[in-house]
Length: 318
Image (cartoon, rainbow, N blue to C red):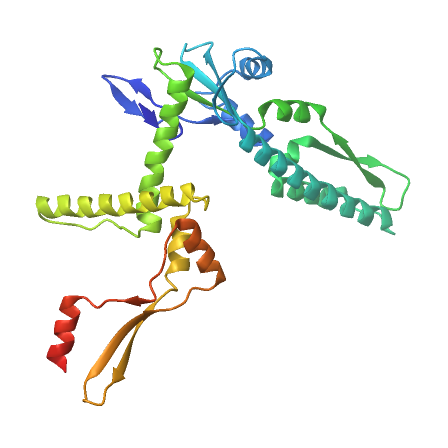
């Protein structure tokens, strides 16, 4: 069974408890994860990631490899994603540039100082710079070296090659763990993806559809509420798949907000016989809306026919 972002561990009499995802991210975060209760040996991870054999493509841009935990004999699914690798590499580069820029400014201030400086505040500034950019902080080693300048020291910045070596291996990589032993790597990975889709369904109902818990007293009303939520989600997913087929992404909210600006209006024209002619007209879409409707294959009518109950209500009020 799946839970969170990993496969659930079974304990006791078939009970399930929530495990911990071990993601291979930044150095400080990685250190905490590697010392967690369910952490996998770092050396085993590095050797498994570096080995070229055993990888199999299960989805475009996603490769997986099955291995075993050296201590618990659990199934470990190593995964690496091209999209995730690009994202994490961009984040490392972004935070590295921020650190370099901040340290350069600090070094210039120290160099231009005309008096002796206390190293303690400077060290605190260095700590703040690294703390604010923790994703790449382990790449840098910053020291205050004695110098003959008026400040009495200068900044010395060195780059840790071990960080870059580990980043080259771990960027875009994550792992899933399970006590299931009779599934192959593709089945385990697809089971995880199904879990993320189920979690996304709950998020959509809360955030996008604005369906909040409602306290019903009768069981039939509870079942009716569940049915309404399910039907709303089906319509939402239908619109999402419609979007994807049209090459418009997968955000139904954007489509609904754009099309909501298309409105219909009733035009009432008096006649010589003191009657009224009521025409229901549809506003013309702008260029963006017209493109969206064309991609979706929707043709807007210029006029809409009034429903019978509307005609009866208008006649009764006349």
